[in-house]
Image (tube, rainbow, N blue to C red; front, side, top):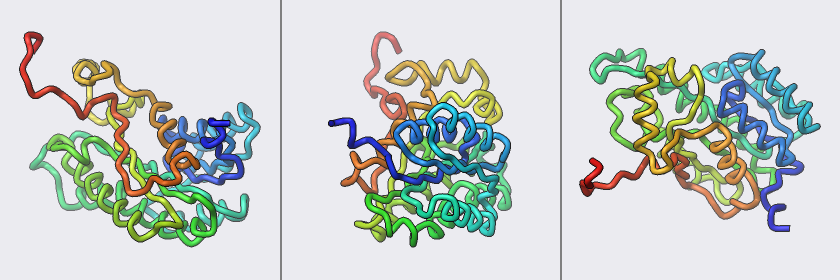
Length: 263
């Protein structure tokens, strides 16, 4: 059947940031597709609650682990726990990331470096630890959460956007060196309704309305919009796809340069 190519039966997938909106939705969708999912998050209680919810809804085995991705020892613990529980790692989704409004000239060196460690270096370190195990599995992959601010001028999020821009090129390099055994791709994520997390980043409701109106699809994304893209890139359907930036942004990248009567 045509839809079988999207199945993740017998896959074991680690999802970081799985206690949040996008990570949680992604873990749900992967489990619905047949995967055994390891949910990692700094908020261990949120990860466990989501894992329990997924197991109850899908019948799939899950594992929840509290992890600070900026701590390399905890990343090793995450890999070890996954192998002890499931015996293998088929795919890794590096979803952890965070950025907030920061004035262009108001960022300290320490803040810039910490943003880079959280948004870029942590995913490098976890990928490095998983790579020997991924290479043993068919159609193994690593997929990263990128951001539109990482590919467009974004002076309002200078620390976060710089880190996400670095991520894009890092993944391209990983793809070039890891193929054909392990595929590496980035999802460039547009504005997604993350609930309170979006407001915490410095937006208000009026700003979000203007942002949604500027998109071709006239709405912000939902977490499962991103989760479905992750499912595709992990699945056999994407077995010839590596080194790409898949934009999932509701058409937020596109705005006519020609003035119209509505402008």
